[in-house]
Image 1 (cartoon, rainbow, N blue to C red):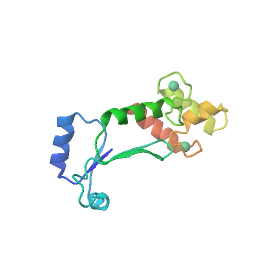
Image 2 (tube, protein in one colour):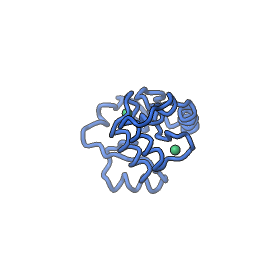
Image 3 (cartoon, rainbow, N blue to C red):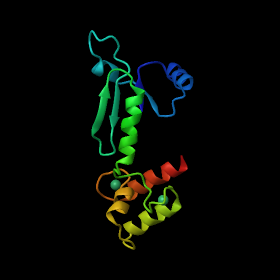
Image 4 (spheres, helix red, strand yellow):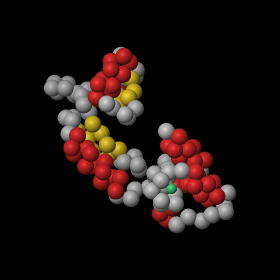
Length: 140
Ligand SMILES: [Ca+2]
Ligand SMILES: [Ca+2]
């Protein structure tokens, strides 16, 4: 996601002009001021990559798209938990939802890989929140 302290119209224009597809948030809580570095050439962009476990994997004051893409690709290929592809067929669909529901009601046991994929929010348990996140991802 992106965070900006500009008017909404400027944020929308920036997103459209740059083809951004990730969520952009408008700073109404002085986030900008909390992370501003006095004397710096420019506090923007402040790029941070956080993995599925919530650990910061990358932080930089200057945009380095090539490095960021490499890190994201490595994280995606690392087999980290989450993602929702429970039956490991490369697709997110109703079959994955059915498996998650079966697991929750006790009709199905998961392998460690299946459990890892089903734990969408990577909190170590599989519950309705994982199913909601999976459904939202499929719908979107
Ligand atoms: Ca699947
Ligand atoms: Ca979970």
